[in-house]
Image (tube, rainbow, N blue to C red; front, side):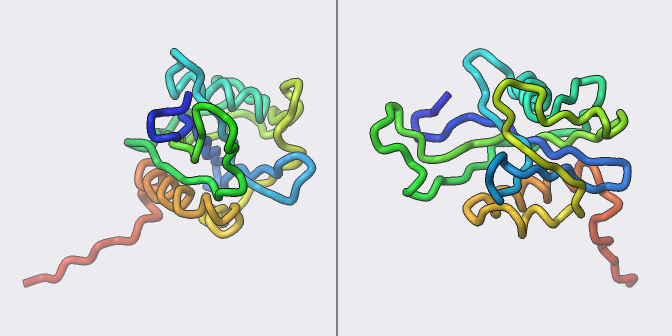
Length: 168
């Protein structure tokens, strides 16, 4: 679904483990790493799209994860001109995403990158919380940073800096 401004509705999935590390996957046949993500279909809620994409891209089912929270609003990124399909209608200029934070509660052996007919990823690993901001393709960096900052406040408040108050 592409909105009137040219942004495709999409979900992003940040999957964490018990140590606060994040699931990081390599696109098949490329040296490009990212979080699982995918489009929202017509008449599909963002949460339903998230669970569908989770299963398609990682093989994980709802019972394998705990839903921690999601971003409060859409986060957008614009595609570089070289990736915009000029002859498509409606024209898609970028993605608008709701990001979900999940915690893996099953054994990581449940992850199956070949769970669908056309896999998106060929390898995955656990990374430190902020590593994806530096490793993702540059045009997604600001969205990744904004999503992780908001999800950090929801799921990992213990990692937020403590605000010290001056005594008077």
